[in-house]
Amino acid sequence: MKVVFGYIAWSEQARRWHEGIVQRARALGWEVEGFCLTPGTPKPCYHFDELDRRWRSRDPELVELQRRLKKALTGADVFWNFNGANVHPAWLAEFDCLNVYGCFDDPETSTGLSKPVAPYADACLIGNLACAPLYQSWGVRHHAWAPLAFVGDDAPASLTPEQVLAEERPLELVFFGERESAWRRDRLDLLAREFPAAMFRGRGWPGGYVSAEERQAAYRRARVGWNLHNGVGPVNLRFFALLANGVLQICDNKCRTGQALALGEEVIGFDSVEECVELTRYYLEHDDERRRIAANGLRAYRERYSEERIWQYYFARFAEWCGNKEQLKREAQSWREPSRRTTLEKVSALTQDVARKLGYERRPEESGAELSAGAAVPYLEREEAGGINLAEKEARAAEGGFFEWPNMVALNWACTRLIGEARSILELGGGTGCFASEAAADPGRSIVCVDRDLDALAWARVHRARSNVKYCTEEEAKLLGGRYDLVVAVDVIEHVSDFNAFLESCCALADRAILTTPNKRRHESFDTDGPPDYYQHVREWSAGEFYWVLRCYYAKVELFAMNDVYVPELSPITVTSRLTPLVARCSHPIKGVGAGASARGGQP
Image 1 (tube, rainbow, N blue to C red):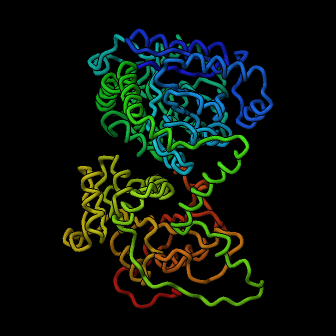
Image 2: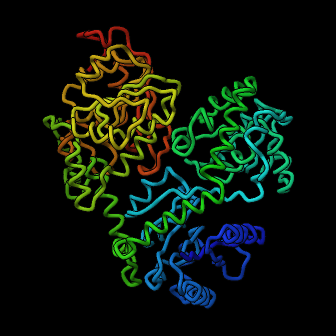
Image 3: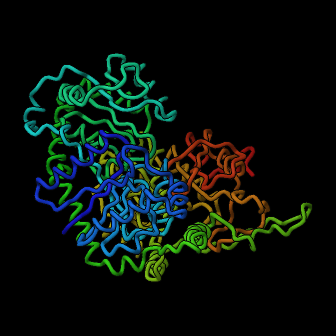
């Protein structure tokens, strides 16, 4: 199999780095050819709007780039656009080989990089594990994780796990990376204050950059290395370089990290910077544990993420996709220049339809916008209809839809960031186990996932089996008895007629809760108390209504929402927010709640 590896050369160093990947792949016996996609290298890649404008005007440099690329792909089986830039989607229909789109910069640069192009590729390799729902929302059907494990000389070939277990390391803490992004800078500055002896280098740090040789020497002397991403992850080179050097890695995005490595055995994960500080202190004081986990991390790198292993992984994905190439090409979005906007609107319509079916959007004709400003609308609820069961999911998938809505996958993943120190977790209405499976990446947690749909539970036991998850019915859960550290219900409460009994049960089962629901004020043109559009929702709440209802049951309620319903990141919101879905972190049940209290002051 022949693979053409397309890359961007924003600098001479970047060109050498990408060509190094190609040369090492060829040395390992893989037929990989590099192709620079930067006209007049070195220079930055084109933002898509500029790429589109240049292509429409038939910019000579871009026309020549397309001609040379088409020639380079003659006889190739796969074209992998590694950085995802500078290839116009109009070109892809002219390439007979499998077109694979790659990107490691989502979601920060999706708008001008991946979103306009990825739906037109035959398959996608996504660097950011957490962005799979985002790609699905664009209509991408075939995708896989792309581990960015090309660390080259940052992986010392002679280092062994036995050395890691025995050697002394004089440098306590290290972080190589920029501190100019506001969201990451605040967290890094806190670490710098807490650990003044740590080594910080990169753009924005007083010490500036270090050479590759200095970085490699520092990694070999370091005990603990932090890994903080600009957003959801894991995705960066640092993730693999720390493993390869026998450095104990303390990494953010805990549950996503746990999909790639064994938490507590090969890597340490955290969800908040305060947790990172606590873990750092612990492992600096417990050196035997630090050495053991670091040695296991090195073994994981050698066994699963060395460049030899990683090329085996990529070629296996290519072979799988090539075996079904014609179908993949039929399913990929087709680009036609005169109807470009129409094509993208179809992708957008698919996204909106997915959201609407979960009650997250309203169609204009159902918006109620025709009501006069002073019209009185009675408060109405629907009859309880139950939850979405396995049969619906399977029927939807059989028709070419999503088995699970991408926005619901993203929401479940996002909620794991609020778990905190909870060890025993009860999930109510867990369905096919999306939240439970994700949260169980931390082996220190024990999760009971409850649902009424026996078929959904059976599916989860097969497809999302985890040793620390028990999928069971309500009756089986009652037999387990006891209380939990945390109760979780993701988009369940809007399906329940007697929400008072539901919330009292939550208070009786745990002192903390994570509860989510759509925001009924999410749509600017519809702001009434009529029944929800979605037939399975009994009622919906605004952010303020949800907050004050929950405050009748819990002394502390914090509200969050997702800025993009397909990206598993949560931000704090106020009671006037229109963002959806609403995510509430609740604690300290009010005295008497959960014990059958019939009345409480202030309860509606």
